[in-house]
Image (cartoon, rainbow, N blue to C red; front, side, top):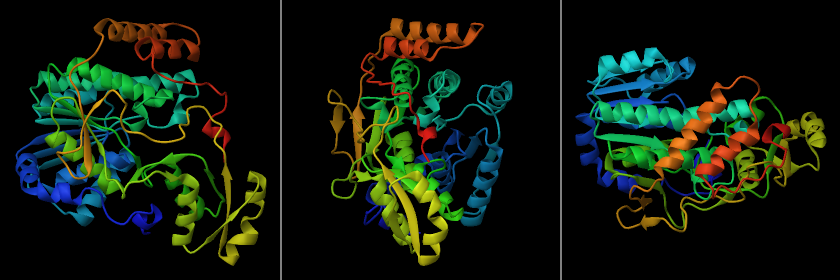
Length: 396
């Protein structure tokens, strides 16, 4: 599968920036002990590969997904082989005593990289998943950045999201709140971050869904009015590595390459994806029509598609990496932009948010989503969230 062709791109984004700094990258990484949290997801695996290539003294990878950790090791052994450093993967929950005991036994680390996240807008539909989103995206970050500070790490890296810029959904809002908490913690340990474009064909993404529909001989469905930037899985690893190694305190790295990185509609990518696989996309008026025509069209080298106008909660029409009041540096790198930050946070608001969410979590009885959203707005008044009562789970 030619991913760049499907994305309507011509070349990798970060080759020049990485190759021109390869010697410095190798020097810094090979001398480091690195802990990767959330290393079994698509981005986490890509970051782990980038570190492994440069043979760190220690590379310890933690994630709750045992199966994906097994595949990570198989993938590395089958392509990169073996390094000289201590490489370990552990299926551990960051909120467990097992994780804490492991870190206590292995500390100190030079770099702690947190790639764990609940990343789907669909996960904000109910108060229970929404509370877990806050636990993973915000409070686990606070826990692990403090662990990094206590052990004297020289850098803590956390992955954010493009949806944290002018957020319109609670997932993006949770990452924007995470950024605010990291401003608070950055006085104890240097912090850098990355805001992402969509990672093409990452686990659980709509494009990954295209490959699943093809394998299962099912119609493809996509919005025709939502535009996104896309990076490859390898580029996601390079972006995080560059921020972790070269980011100054509170820098946020993001992809930037005019002419090569352009907003693209999901529906256009669906058509190119099918063409790349040897099929012609055939638009259908309804989901029912698309489902009904699979057996007719597929033997003819055609594939039923259903394109629709987005009407679900939390969908942003276009993607952006920064806000109008943020200071930008486009001069340091060829294909990476950097948001420059000074610590800026309201300690009382953050403390009140922590207390408010804890009160909801510890209270008996059912949780109320509106009450959680009120806590969001108390610390993130700029959140432009519109509850439409319809979520992506109601789409094909």
